[in-house]
Image (cartoon, rainbow, N blue to C red; front, side, top):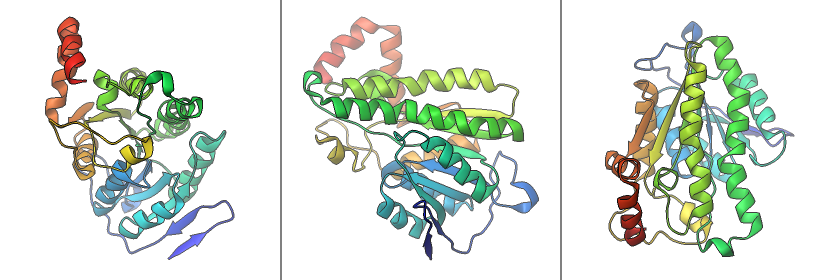
Length: 277
């Protein structure tokens, strides 16, 4: 049953089963561990919610589509907070909501994202601002709110969901590529800063994923040489990053090759990219 509050939040409660998490300490007093998943109204975030719910985690889901969030919660019981990450103060509201419902945050999966495709000279200013704001400042501001609570507790993990566009750059997605390149360096820097605190950081970099993302950005995926990855496969990789403590994971694993070629032979990489995009 869903109960909407005046703030637009909702609790969706179902019977739960606590399942121990491999490679990670159990929640206090036998309680299931708690995770905040952003961008959970569809695609990768929704798949991550289902994956962790099946493992007995207590979830708080955030996304900009209230009705879509409720549909996700029918399969992944959770507390819901439909929120716009570009709204000032949204990160503080969400953090208070999470702590009020779970008392702690063992995991934050930063899956929120926005995109736009087309000629860079034609990108509308509103789309440019939305992509940059959602993909970078919105994520960083929320992590900044959540991490201190993890440090205080002496444990916790942040998993940032990146993109192949940020790892190698994609033709027709200059703004999205720029915004998605940031989580890679942010993950490294934050990881170094949290060393010894009990907090940790993981980065998951997926290839093109079969989600409504392409419909919303205004241009379908036209890649002919490789089909999109199911969001469930990305969710499995996020689970692996958490349960095995991995710093960085690519979906599929072959995605590491373009980044390595770019680093080792940038001239060759650019010639290939000019042909294949």
